[in-house]
Amino acid sequence: MNETSSLEIRDSTANPAPLGLFGFGMTTVLLNIHNAGFFELNSMILAMGIFYGGMCQIIAGIMEWKKKNTFGFVAFTSYGAFWLSLVALLVMPKLGWIDNSSNTGMICYLVMWGIFTLLMFVGTLKLNVALQVVFGSLALLFFLLAIGDATGNAGFKHFAGFEGIVCGASAIYAGIAQVLNEVYGKTVLPLCPVKK
Image (tube, rainbow, N blue to C red; front, side):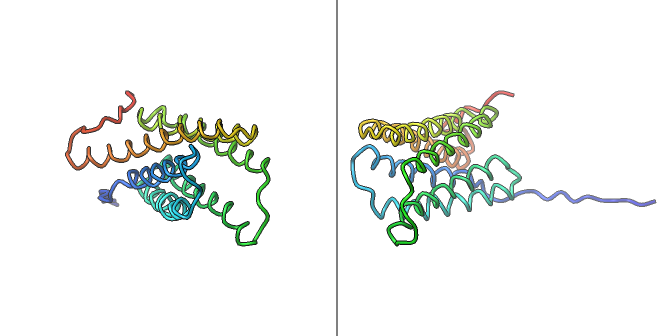
């Protein structure tokens, strides 16, 4: 008689989602303070885009893959790549590597990210309200920025910047809620999970 035994390995790795949410949220807030008209596009935003919004989100995404969380894996690696691609779009022409993207090209870029985010938003309907706010406000932000580029209306882009600050702040909230709830072993800040 052949007996097979199975060994269950418990996942003891940390929750990577707060890192990804902070990387996304803080970088989004800073870029959108610029979009709202408070300061120029500068090296601080680009550095945050490469290292915190970009690399840290990709690291968080890879850690979500290890935890078998497809949603987290796709979301964090994709938005990490978004930040890296956005910085590349801004920096590569300055280095003389390639011409600036056309206005039409940037509108298409923003619309595609808006569609992707809207599709990911559907996934949040099974998760929690905090993530629904993050993804819903982010989809809206991409579409608002695309409309701002299409119309050339600076006031509209400033409005989009304020909406982007709210979006980034909602991601920061979702990140700190997960950290504090785990540290204190109780709900300190509610994420409002969807009832199954």
